[in-house]
Image 1: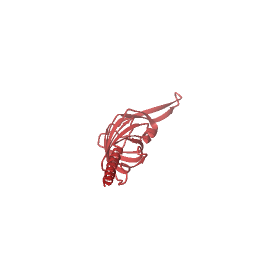
Image 2: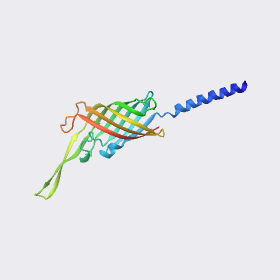
Image 3: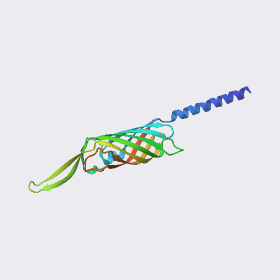
Image 4: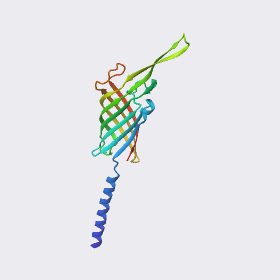
Length: 192
């Protein structure tokens, strides 16, 4: 009887220890970068995602050398734009923690200017090719939503594919750009 009580006590302590270990293995944060923005627009993107219970998280990202969507990505001369994005991600998977299909509302604050190579012409009088640059202001606030899917590898690395659309909230007065901005992402992350 004494051995049975000791065995039950030992099993109970092992079960409670394994439950504590499982909760300690749950990651609470993720850092990531959008590789598609880096390749297409030359923007450097750094994101932080704080993971909450019930498959929800708060996402904050900073983008340096930002552009307005992918407008003029092939004609970009220089950009001084910096943006700050905040989003609240809601994951729909019941089996996976903070992975799978997700939806998010977002707000973006952007400041700066973008200069593009607008057009060029050949001047026969000087026998030279002249380029004209165009600079436009991308400062403003936009709000919208996005959809995506996140895959988890080795319980550390993540790969996310997403798309989002946002509307400018009256701050952009330039006729060169639209009020709607679409963006896409191939995001590589590390969870810790």
